[in-house]
Image (cartoon, rainbow, N blue to C red; front, side, top):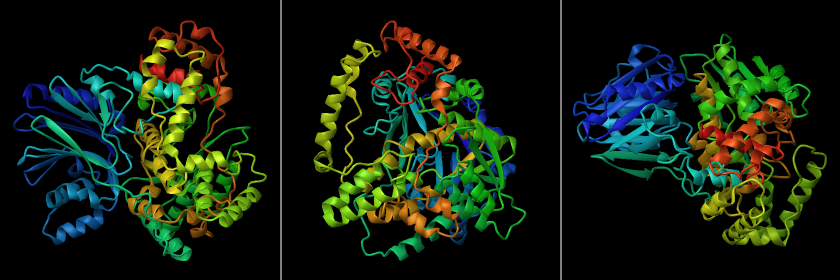
Length: 624
């Protein structure tokens, strides 16, 4: 896990080691174990690198790495199946001087060019220069676990792991008002119709599952991986599906245990992280020296604290559990640091707690952590998915729908955590058949209501109201379509950004077993009834891993997000002062009305037509 930087230009005066050093110095936190800088013989290409040593801790694994006197690579990430690929390459005559996955990637590119991406199981963002052709080939992993930002300035193409590298190189930091409007107005952190857009003008990110080729001052972007959400395997039985899910998941966990440094895991007490921990415990059963460390966030006297379930996992495994209790004063102290590392707005105070979990891992000397991120999006773990599921099966069979809905009502009768889903009526039926029309009407209603909103300035609203991103076009009558939207467009991409920035702020690496592309492709091919059944979310996973997980966790009815007691934090005197100061900044920028700082403060995380206090804090930080 590392940080990368690059400058590409046909004007060699633009490509200097001095600028590359400034860029990589801005991301020392991503790679405290070493640095490297390289400029091509013709002066058109410059690469920088910060190293966090995970595989092959020797100098043989240092970057930028050269291969066959032709290729140079700066690489951030991990190729989990590098050992299998390396064996295949050796049989074809390739030789290696290191034990790193970086050198394997170079050799595979030499053999297959851009087709190498199809073979990689990993998280990555990299740039590779081919001296023979003059091209620079850049790519990002299928889900966007690792970041790749780029911009053009003064005749040069810049790329990096974080946008602060561009500011360090002398490029102006200018917020993107269109993204700011959509965040304040709709609580949106992504533009689902343009996944390359960021919160800063002129700065783009390479979308997940895409590669970019730069040559002679021009670049093009292409997609290399795509899932068809409408393909379903109707011939597979539940027993066959359970067996394949077990095999793919355990293989994914096993590959993500490959490391030359200590590996641990996050543990929330929910089914996803608990399964990761229990799977690791089983795989390490014959290695008693490999004591597994887990890291958890706890909340004193808070009804959503999950200590009870964390204890259940501890009792069933050989883990050493480490816990951090988040206090209000601590949250206020780290807020500015987290804003610096995240660079773009984040949704709630849960990100502050996640930051502390990775900080604890650093204190305990554990460099790599596995995590359960991604399971909710691919396996329908969030309760709002029930509505889409009911819409889908109602179209197929009225009798099956009645049975499923009755089972759901019975199972969740006493669930005090999650809001109950009502029985789909005419409104839901129309929405599921005409999603585009309904979304457009919904946007008009929201914009009409905004006319009488209290805080957003009238001029700012009028300037950007026609650039709203809330016309979501996923099929409200197809569960897979909804899951695709959450996995690839709005939802998971933002969560992956949070995890990357928070972990790398402490030079930690996070690996996600649920985001093996083979596992995801398989899960997406399964019928909706395998994902939600008889009122249970993640039904296939629960069935597949009965016995490995503690029973009370396997069949938990509630779904608790990573939720700290945010309301009380927002009501503290220090937080209130920060919010008023933020509103002053946004009023001066013409985003909020004059006098907004004197109006009542809304303490919830979610925005209300531009009035959410949390969002004001977030946006103001970008204008500092």
